Length: 353
Image (cartoon, rainbow, N blue to C red; front, side, top):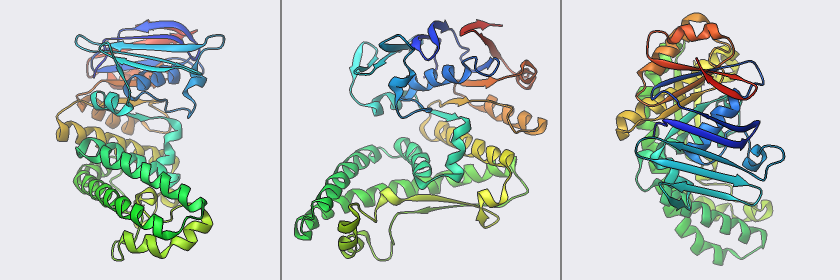
């Protein structure tokens, strides 16, 4: 969903602000601390109903206010979000939504921000999130299996902490395995199907390296999950959590058969990150036939001129709406080849150039 108007009230340092973004390319320039990242956060919030900067979205409420309000619309759709310490409400076209997944269905979005480098250097949870974003759109029943698996896993872990006999957990495991195997299959298919796109874009940005991508399911596929759950019961009971399953899955990324952080510089890591996120957008547009919004915080950071030009070309190739932040106005020259709008942020006021 591309927005033709966005309004913010009591969000971060914005008391009240609004702007009308371009349907394709939007560049937000401003000094450090001017609120560029907050503006991107607001756009992302309208797409997925949560923040990419904090696990406590109510902390985004402006000091002195009880809640923030975000609104975005185009000619056919209207989204409103209200969030406070005890308030969370999403309204889509006049109807209240009860599941964030319903919002995500209509407005797929990918974000690149400074902390996003954890996708490459952080815990497996970051890479599971990367896979699951794509599998959510690629597989019709992924979300149903994901939701049911998480519910059963939570119950199993609670039983483990209560020292419940395995006779009671055995029946639970049978149901857990059904959803776990369905999750693994959806993840496997997504990784398999997107690999060509990822490899092509990675080669374009970093042709000097050979990249490898493989999915670890979270258990030994040869032994089977049911048997491993049973064999690990005593250890799981002592630890209080389940050792095997899709909650332990990981996307293993290698560069010349080595760990990425052992080979790539900081700038090269950003290029790889951009390659992965762009691949998801490009694949989504072809696979699902719908646009994917792309948000990039600090466009020029750690990239030389040739890479900035290449990245700009890729961003223009996307069908979805794009939002980019930049500190220096000179960075806008990379986007003169196409149609775009430039906005300046100063004292939390958004002005179109």
